[in-house]
Image (spheres, helix red, strand yellow):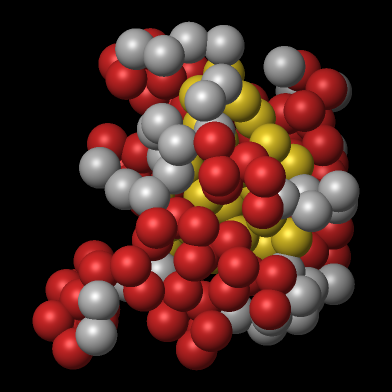
Length: 172
């Protein structure tokens, strides 16, 4: 998976170098992984550095969106409102991807955003929506706990690569 992790970090760095942001979201425990990524980008990961432009889609807004329209649009509505061409969506999920996951990918593509997907091998309908320029990290496990652990390792690896690409190796 190292090549795909490197591609994901390069996609994120490219967005940042062109003054775009990283939008993160996910459902269930994968939502915590998405939140962890955004936090690592906004604060120092392993070494002191400037904050990087990242955000996690709000669960508070999601509740209001679900009450007003549908749970299926909790991420898509926020992406349409906040996403801009050149931004990058990092989407974490398990299984086939819920309707909310599918609509998030569609909304990102409508806004000319690239998508980085962290999922298990049965990425299902969500996988089929990804464009050739998107990056899919499909971990070869089905057990939710193992998928979550692999997503966390991938997020830490991505953060390490981003810091190295943008700020060099602090130990060199």
